[in-house]
Image (cartoon, rainbow, N blue to C red; front, side):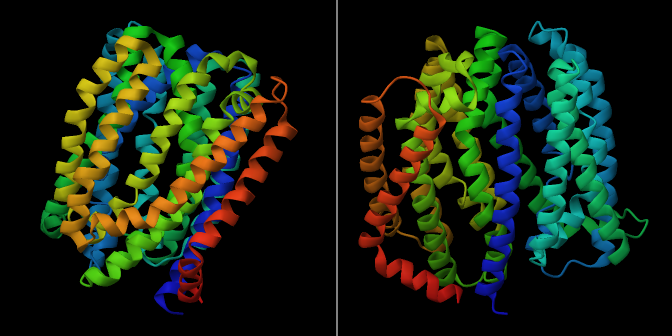
Length: 478
């Protein structure tokens, strides 16, 4: 099977896993939004920021080097494995100690227990992390899909069961922990049966990974902090309820690109890593990937903006209507996030984690003043300022980075996405006109019909405009 076919097969499995997993997460969000108050979501958002920031350090930034390095030995992989396990335990201990101080920082004593429980993830994930990366490197996404779907089913089951039995905010903690334990157990059973790590931890085995790891760790830390500064500041300045509305709107907005983008990027990284010396092939592959992202994501976000009020009414219930305005603005940000995300696959495949580090450092320099300015005007102000900062990083700066990596010119990039953008805006505007002419009541059937009709009209427009590119992509995959 050639590389294109392997990539297509891998993408199919990743798409199944992503659709099922994120569909279950959306269902969980819709159900828990009716069982828990906004304050609980706000509190979990802060705990997740703390734990998510610490997760950048669990593999010392060297995990993705397993995929990038095509010649890693069993001795090197063994040392990396035990380094991950020991680092996870150390971070768990640190978070346990710091939890009361962090809770006091946000004047929310209940955060102490929540953060401590969230930190259990550091004892679980490192056990299976390397085996997951090895499966991705081998493009064995079918097995990964089965494991991830099983973990998602357990996550929603535990979360709903505990919420119905009065667990409150802890339902948002124990569900993901159960899913993580299921996933790690499956990966460990597979990994140890195929190629169990030796019991060794030798600094000499890690030399070829250190430079990659340092920049990757720094990039993750800065990237995560940049993406979550809005939540940290909103929680401090406006309280848990305002943060809850913002967080749930943000989660709903980010769901589409979290569903779709990994279908491409998880497969693109190992595929690009195999062709890392051929800039022309990488450039062509990246343009195809961006074209597919724009084709799918642009109409989704256009319709989310146009149909925001009935969408939140159907998915979350009437209690969440105060979040409609924030959600519409954040959906504009979704356009940019979905386009910016695939760049990471090029950086990792080229081994240029240093560029990723400096790019994210630059972005956080933009985000800090933008969020501080926007926080004066509440969640909507933060969302607008994030849009301005992200647009600057994605286009002027992003153009330079893509050109330096593979010689991709701005004209080629814009020509790839422009037809889809125009068609999506037109379809979104038409959907809004139709919806606003009907009753204000949030009707699920009407929402589905409008979305489906808008999607079909959009596809008809784009097919007429980009017929040649579609045929070329289909030929490449077959």
